[in-house]
Length: 161
Image (cartoon, rainbow, N blue to C red; front, top):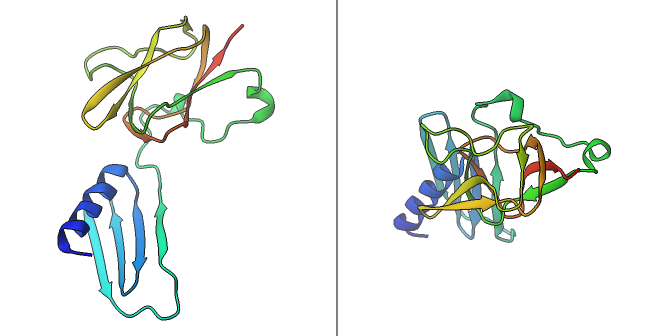
């Protein structure tokens, strides 16, 4: 692993929001820890004996909560089984507003119809509008504004009735 690959890894970890990443390959151990405003990188080149290369282990912790009313870390299956879950179609950064000075696309309790824009997800400097495929009422927003989302990650709960 050369210096450029390590620098790219550090940039990736900083953008992903992860607080710590450990990577072990052949004779290299890399630990990248990010804090509030500082980054720490520990690179050890030591022989690793009788171990198979391991995949990167990512430990992620929430940095801050902007809107406490929209945070739902655990979804109860019995209460939410009657709702439709709208999931992220791509990997990127989730935004509830078109720009910082504009109002939210949708709010909890708001009625939506098919084709309404619910949010945008930024992926590789492109802002992709996520449209509703169902009509109903927004019950919960499951992701914080400006946070990274994975493919198929639940974003909204919608009551179709």
